Length: 293
Image (cartoon, rainbow, N blue to C red; front, side, top):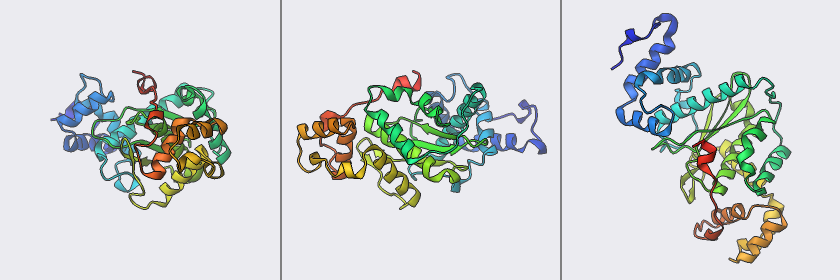
């Protein structure tokens, strides 16, 4: 139990702190605390009291209000709230540390195509945090919390800077790039909506994307633009490996149009709903390196 007297200021002028303490007391059991320590959001020797600043941030940004979240009902709301708050605090820290931080203006469809083109350059994804800073966008990798089925979040800081947080709960290269492009599509299409976080659970399992769980128009739009940014429709129509399982056709198409072969293979598996196809072309990201492990 908390001893409220341990906190210097808990009165009518500091309602957020009191709300945070009550929220933690009501919702954070020992198992959730263990998961937060395992994820690295809390240190191994941390106590419940160490969560207070994080939860205060939740209340200040109204992130505990359920209607602000667009997420799978399978996601654990408490863990997701804390995960998003942790990303927000890291993003705010980046803004404070970088004196020449570029102010976000807009993100165009052409910008999306330029960013997607990096997917065919060896290990270029490891530089995306710096690349996106040139567009005035902050990218944060924050380890998935055990039991949390959230892939990414997009929102704006109070100064208007867009932030993308990615959990990297699946390490597949095609998953990584589609998730990133989906979140960038939100910034391109839905920037006016991002005062509230858009939380995405795009995958139910390693091989099963979630298809229109709530028939959400916003998510449909982001899905479509993400696909078109990675492989334009007129080029995709020329992919013969979609209709005849043939490794050479797949590689030739990938080479001709400068599209990473694992992404092409992933598109075909998804389109055909046959997740056994072209498995030999799958590859993984260096997840531990992105997470700083």
